Image (cartoon, rainbow, N blue to C red; front, side, top):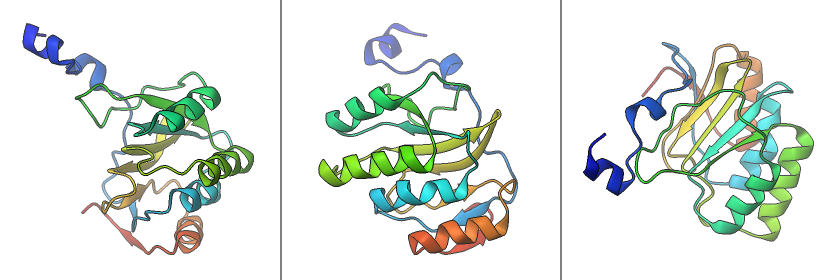
Length: 165
């Protein structure tokens, strides 16, 4: 890596790799801007033992909370941001952990929760959302049944379709 890239803090290509959703026709779920509703509904979508990967938190109180509940990464998730170097956290997804996160956010609201959100389990991405809580759709692996994806979407007030935009 050149001097300018190091000086600017650009992440080297070798550190950008990792797991990502590589399916040809994933489920596509319309976005939500409601962070608390999303984290409360996420356990409906993914099985116990899944880890949420939150990248690029926007506020220090959120970063502090996530660092306290974060666990060591089981996999390297492909970074969505190459500059500036993002913070990221691997958080177990369970009804209890997501309810606690939602309650924290109810008490300490955030204007910008995270830039990217992914969920993985057993070395595979189950859920991928770049530009989270904006206008980009969420993508869900076909490993997750249509019935479960529709239940998740209904809980968010979202719609389900198929394939990449």
